Every structure is written in structure tokens, then in C-alpha cells.
Image 1: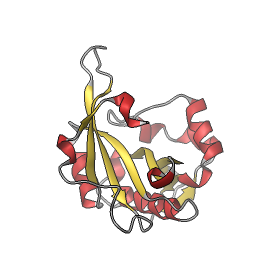
Image 2: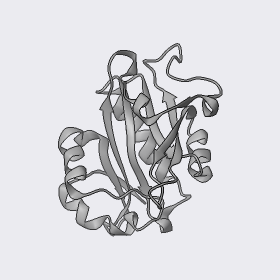
Image 3: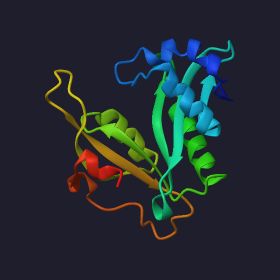
Image 4: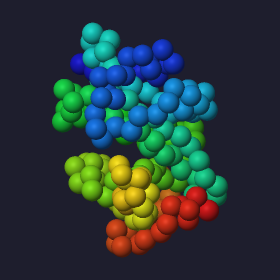
Length: 180
């Protein structure tokens, strides 16, 4: 049985097994701590009965007006704990937290356009591609940048589904246009 727990600063010393994955973005400690300080209810983990962290979610709330939303900054599950529903548990909890107390219109995330496994998982969770952000991720060689999909899921506040669009894979924007 896995438990959902609030993330604490000392948990940063216990997430190595989760972060040692090629698809998990790693950040410096100050980045994690800034999220924990600003959005503590949107940063949480799953633990196995032995108290080992098996996955975590780092999220935030941002935007203005109808662009007010929750954001998945990092979702990661340890390799030995994949395909048992932990990602769904973490995402569902972020959705609940984004709706109450944050009253967000939607939840969004960015994923590499080449990461078909993650894209398929998020689509199963009800997300759709809102737009393609051209060159969002830096390439390993410093030259060849990779596109990202901005995926969104409308929440209860978005009754008219204004936060999503059809055919988002073909709606291209530049990274500098994302945060206008």
C-alpha cells in the first residue's frame, strides 16, 4: 500500500531513486525549496510501507484571469513503482488541490514532443495538446532544441472548456510567446 504525503525539505535527501531517471528533470535545491515555500500544498510524494519515496509531484498555481491555472512542474515515479497507478494518484491530487483552494480554470504541463509514453499517459488522464512550443527544450548538443507540447485539462471552473482547443499539435508558438 502506498501513502500520499506532503513533501518536506528533508525529503530532498530521499528522492534520489526517483530522480535517477533519464526522463526526470533535475533541479538545484533552491528551486525545489522555492516551490515548497510558495506552493506547499502542491508539492507532495508517495511512499511505500517502508517509508521510501516512490514518486512525487511538484506543482504551482499561476496566471491571471481565465489563464489562472495549476501547473505540473515535475511528476516522477520510481521505475519499480510504475504502471500501478501512482502517476494517476499524484495527478488526481494536484487536480483537487488546484480546484480547492486555488480555484483554477485548468491544469497544464509541458512534455517533450518525442515522449510518446508520457503523452499517451496524460491523454488517458483527460489532457489534450493545447499547443506546440517550438524549441522549448534545449538540445544535448546546445544546438538542436526539441519542441514541447503544452497539454491541458479543464477543471470545474472552466465550464465552457475555453482552456482547450482541437488540433493543438499543429498550433505552433515560440517559447517567448508562452508567458505573455
